Image (cartoon, rainbow, N blue to C red; front, side, top):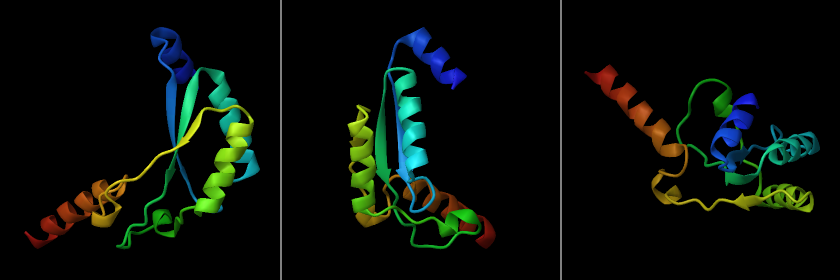
Length: 119
């Protein structure tokens, strides 16, 4: 948070936070309270992003992540708005070709990994 303070006081540019909601991971009342506190620290906005399922499996914790439902996302956003937090639900493009936020980068990394194995 020191970096946020430093950046804002040097630039006077409001901070934008990108927040992906995961089911039963970061969608609780405690998470909402923390976001409210962070958003009030300096002028800012929060973009809520829907998690995009990845069709292939990866090892570890990321394999178990599940996106919050649209109903949960809307309730989360309403709680933030009720606290006068500047919050938006970011639209997603590219889902139909597995190129939405987070999908393409992982897909490319996996493709490069597969290419390295083959050659």
